[in-house]
Each structure stands twice: as C-alpha cells, then as structure tokens.
Image (cartoon, rainbow, N blue to C red; front, side):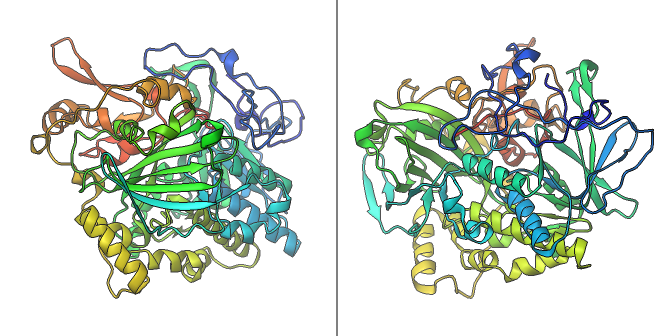
Length: 633
C-alpha cells in the first residue's frame, strides 16, 4: 500500500509538504465480486508526478500519494496555526492532529471554489490563512461524475480569465433538442433548457484544473483520505474532521500496513461531499437543520452514464439532446441525456427518480434498454464504450434546502442540495455556494463576523432566486408524466416561476416503493455486447477498486431485514436498484436465499442509502482511495 500522507507526520525525514494530486490511480482490474482477488500492494505504489500531460486526454495510470513529513516532536507538543501556517498537535487517543484555519471535505466544484475564493480574499486583503482540502478519491476528480452541460456563470465570477488559462472548457453548445420518446418513435418538443452560452465538458477534468488553480494560490490538497468523523469541542462546536484508519483487515485486526487516522482541526470546517454526503447527512440530522427552516425531505434521482467514442461522421461537437418518456412508464419521473463532447466522444445517460413505485424496476437495465431505441442505436453502432459510472443527485430543490450553518462550520454544494432541476445543472450553483462559504469563512476569521453570513448571503444570491423560481417543477411530476409536463410548461412560459403556490414533495423515496404483489416482474432483454452490456463489463469500465481485506463500508442496521422483509414483501429490490451488483441474494445452506454484499463493487452512488424500503442500509466511507477511478466523466 502506498504510504499514508497524513499519518507520516512522525517521520524523521524533512521533505517539503506537497499537494501532488495530479496523477490518477487506475486499478488494473476492478473488483466485481467479494471473493475476487485483490491487487497486491505493489499495484498502489506511488509514482511521483505533479502535472497532467493534457487535460483533454485521459491521464496515465500512475498514482501518487502525498507525503507530509515533519521532524520528531515531543508528545503533546502543539504548534498552533498562526499567520496561515499549518500546526501539529496531539490528537485524541493515539491519533495525531493537524491544525488549519479552514478544513474542507471534498475536492469537487464546491470545495475547490470555496478554497480558491478564500485564498483570493487573502491575497486581496494581505491576510494569510491556511486551507486544506480532503478528498476520499485516489486523486482529484476520480469520484466526480456529471452530465455535464456547464453553465460558466460562477466560474466567470471566480476566475474571470479562465478562457485564457487552459481550462478544459472548449465545446460550446451548438444545438439543443428535447424529445418525448415512445417505444419506436420520437416527438420533438420545445427545449426548456436554454443552453445558449453553455459548454459540453468533462466535469472531472474541470475539477483537476481547478485543483491546480487552488494549489497555485496556496491550498493544500490531500486525495486518498476519507473523512469519517466530525470532531466537536465540549460546547458541541464543530472543530474539524478525522480520517478513518487504514490497514484494518476484514476481521478488525491490524494488518502490517495499519495506520491510525488523523484529526484535521479547523477554525472553520466546510463539508462539500456531494450528494448524500455521509458527514453532511449526520450533521443535518444531529442539528435538525431542515427543521430549522421548515424544509421538506430531500428527494433524489439515480444517474447512470457511459462515455462513448463514436464514428467520425456521426459526431456533432456541442450537440445536446434530452428526452423523457420511454423506456420509463408514465408514472416514473426521469429522462435521458446525450451530449457530444470533443474527440468523437459522447456522454449518454439515463436519470431515474428514486421515488419510483415498482420494486421490479432495474435502473441499470432500463438504461441498457434505452440505448436500443431506434433514434439512439444508430449513433452508437460501431462505437466503443470508454467509461461507465453512476451517481445519485439531489432533486428536492428549493423546498429541501436545509439551514446550512452550524457552530464552526457549514454545508455547501450538492451536500446541501442546490441542483436546479429544470436546468438539470448543479455545478454552477455548487461553485457559487462554495464561493459564498469561502467569503464567509474569511470574514469570520479575519473580520470577526460569523458563519451565519454564508446563509444570509446565500438567500440574497442568484442561487436562491433561481431555485425559488424553479421550485414547482420537480414536485409537479408526482402526478405523472403528462400532468407534470403540462404544469411545468405553464409554470415556465406563463407564470415564469411566480405562481403564488409552492408544491410539496410526495413521500420520501424509500417509502414510495410498493410491495411486489402490486406489480408484475419486468422482463429485460439480454445485453447484446455491442450496445448493451452486463454489469461486470460495465464495472470494469468504471475502474472501481477497493482493498479486498478491509471492513465492509456498507452496513445493515438489522441483518434480518433483507430475508424477513425486503425479499418476501419487495422481492429483494436492492439486487436491482444498485447499478453495480453490490447486493445479491444467493442460496444458503438451508436452501433459502440470503443477502450477499459485494462491497468491492461499490460505485459510491449512495442509491442503497436512499432507496432501501426500511432504511436498513448505512453507507459509510471505505478506506481512503477506494472506489471508482473516473477520468473523462
């Protein structure tokens, strides 16, 4: 195993601190079964590198673990953060601790925007604050997946010269179409998305570029480290996070590679974990943040995506297509996207709301079926799939935003749920929320303000304005596809978001699942290996890897629920809603069926944490560096 950066603080060597996140880790073979062999330690040895060969091309397989090395310090010696310097102090128990002014969890658009904006203010005001960003992926961008038609509004504010600074944003939207699909036909409707001035991009390539810009202004970034715990002081004020232990075997024993987790303490802590962030959800529940603003429950969708390389004559850079309808039924909300990127690449995917009713519905198989539509299949014929991935996204919008500030910290980006559903965009809103949080953190630490400034400015921002105007779009579809389309058209073209009415969401997604006896099983066609594929083939393309000998990061609150509740009442829906075949019912010694969890397959999509009918599955962070290894998503 590569050497842990944060737990190397007791090393005697004096090498300088770096943030060498640029070369990605790519597994030789993704794990697709809990009994599959795990790559040996040598497959994860660090290879130093600090540059991309190109933002436009997939990075190489090399990986690099950051190293922090300090001279030996006496036990209990504390070096506090003063004038922006990093501090070392004794942690709780046998954990070491690093102190910063600001600790950010998550190197996505929100976290990096917060870090960059805060450091920009330091330069503008001649201040010096230390900022670190933790990222659970093996490299920055490895866990980032999105459509993505990018609205540059927030980036224009954050880095106005991005067009001249090598940002991987090159393909402007050239056409924008919206179809209603039946099984064999497509009906073109007026496009409601207004993508003029937007770009088709790879979001994980964009965040790599943003990470480089963050490092240039002094941000320290540590990929491969999973924040697993929120730290509080005696007054229940957030004072940082702790990473999980590494090198723990499945049976709980310590392997030779064992390294204790590290505490990262910050005067301000920002959680930017993305949709359904594990620490963010803990904080929302513990501090009753939705109740504080009478917010409704969050509602989610699962997005499944592939990147293809297609034949030259079929490629139309900047072409954007969205669809609704087939293969989903009239009561299930969802739709597809198909974006033409650069280099003959297209992004194609299907998004399905997780409040669907039929427990026999399989989102992965629905996506494979969709690709065979007569209007889609000809484009893909002769092409090659380059990558596969999946992720959940927030769809609750304005009604579901929690109060986003707690003593000592704040929740930003998709962790708080700022996706604009009618636009199908959340990157620009996530970035803006991060910028506002960075500004509030600066004013808190330098000017004596409080983090409530973030919430106040959030409500004055264009994020709030946009989400409020779009608030009725998503809940309108709880009445079905046609009523939803009619109401949303009325809201957009007649009332323009000013209807004096705010619709409520229906049941939480897990409660929306019907018992199996109300539905007939769905028979899906077998994959043909050219347009549609089985799950193991797709998993291979996601570059997913977890250390084999580690405790499972997926926990059952009650081990009897799958066999006593989920299987007899709901026909075992976890074996279908997971797009990575993590959950399988296999024969046991008593000739019955028992749930088997292939945790190594996990894409970190969080669908299980959301959709399980009894909320019996708990998703926690695995050992840092595990998970998918996306490069062009």
